Length: 514
Image 1 (tube, rainbow, N blue to C red):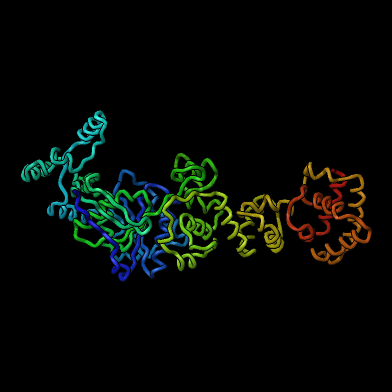
Image 2: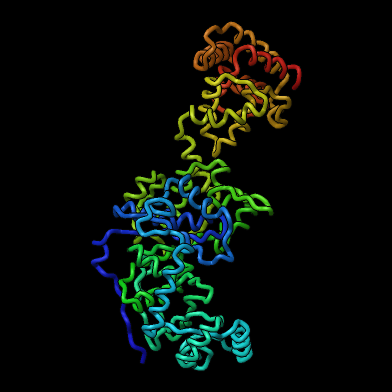
């Protein structure tokens, strides 16, 4: 009968300072799932008056990508969730790069060897491949654990002298964790509740390699302990590693942090983790910033015109809510209400349209002047010279219809350039009497001195009422003349902004063209 081991939440932990970390590997651009993990750590720290720090886990030098670390830092800065401690910044427990801490890990690996919690293993890759193949042929799965470790090439089957000799001779080895036998680990996850693991089903994970580098598991535990991490908030892909990590804390006789494993961000259609391919296929970014390689450019939220606040707001609600219908939160508001107990267990589907909706909400909140400054380069690139005050007014009139500043030109090009063609469907409303009515309208417009939207509208509508002319007979052809289609903001706002001369010129052109 297996022995039951319980590990329950220590009530004293919250009395300690909350210290949480985001620990990415610099192997490429930061995925949006990683951004959300960083965000939830940041919010949790802020909520509890704690510290959010970033540690660079670069022990796997084979996968190291130049520029990735700088990219991660820049992305978090742009999003407004920069860590308060990281490489080169308030390094209270530095260094914050694992590659610069490698001597440290050897000491702890040796401690585990000496206490009997780990052992040296000399099995070659070829040997292990053969064992896996043999097990496959028998319809089994090879697991390097208690069931085979006493029969394989390691310090459990070699004498201490022989082991020392082989290491001294420079023979390749790894240090494996010696997983306890016949235990049921009853662990607690803040999000998932109570979880049980049978130690007999766990493998003896590699902790350290003869090249002097630790694996993720050892480095992670040692650093979390030394950096006084109180809570480990990470993606659910790390859930299978939780029993090993808890056992490592036990082996070192250290107090384990509390764990919370976040749900996956899923594809928009169907199940499965959101990938770069999904973004490429459906035209939305999965990285916070643009990422350039020899193969090409992967789009980023920043370069696509998303506001960082919108990205943060959208991500916060992927797998979490505050228990209300509220959707729009500032970063400060999120920090006030964030609660790990309200994070969902199930994965959250990524919705590209909802993503845009959030950006729209933040766009319409922006100052018109700031939006005009962002739009100006696009206008000038088109070769259009426009008065800045006018540009601000144009932006104010169209922003309600836009998701991004990049949408502005399509929504407003008629302000700057007269139509060269007219919507075919709308042109069907151009009747036999329309040219005559448009000529009368020109006369009315010519006599207006105070050429402002409200005044123009009042006078034009009075003329139509007095002459018993139906609204549709004038307003649709009027808009078609100015815009080329039945679209755009309030008609008389357009008239004011393009001015009397241009308005009349466009009506005259339409009379001769349609």
